[in-house]
Image (cartoon, rainbow, N blue to C red; front, top):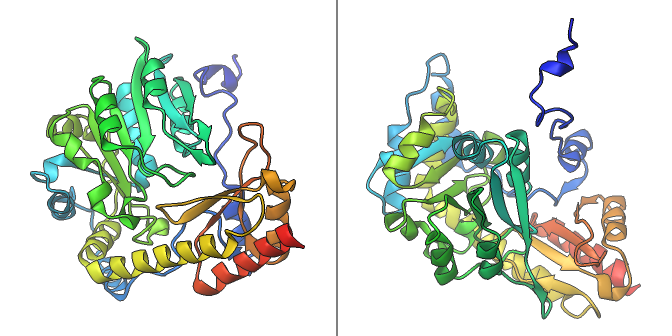
Length: 366
């Protein structure tokens, strides 16, 4: 009798379950301040909580296909209707479903790095080959290189994915460069998880009307502050959305989640409050730390800030360790570009942000 391991497909063998160690730490030690996972520090609004309560009483019923919430999303984005929208259990499921519809074993996915880790995870689980195109590090900035992305295209390229704004650098690529990549005709995912912090005027959603191969993905985990509810969506041409939606698990998004998401979309004031607070606090942190000699701070259009303290002579991991001693969980960042001073923090409450500034100043100036 063959061992059970022999029945696994080769590209799944040896892949471990994804575990986010910093999130596990935060739940295990709730006294620590969560400044590491790009969460929103504000709890759900009263309108969202009202929807949760109302539809929680209907949890004995299967959900519908989400026509109301999909229509609302289409309306917000100037698209024709629900046929342009696919819902997912967070944008992670959205990526998973898109990748499963385009990738066969050995097919290639191009990503621009550093970037969100989910693209690698979903590519690997399907036996795909990940092609990472590094962003140049020039003049103390990480910049996009659309020429290098296009140069990486081969006859095996099935997906190109670019974050708008990028995670973790927090900057945008130009609309002209998005259009150049879209011109390739290759399925092109534009990940807009953090777009609301700058407003939908910075979105590339209009490309959908010209390019059938462009898919824009979003989430309610960030600016809307609903990370624990797991609600994401994709926007695209109705033929493309219809085909990838056919691969969804039935009832993949629950009733409570959909109606809570609708309440969040309709709570315009609630979103505005969260965005204004975030952007104000991001400016505060950047200004408060701008005088540290050798410190490079990446101006962010999202709810996280990337730092490179290599020029101070102090490793970023040591900063993360000191922060935890002071009750703050920061996000470590791998060595990049031969530099070891990287770390990242998520915007927290007003009190947490001031604690973070104090800890960073202490580490680099004393």
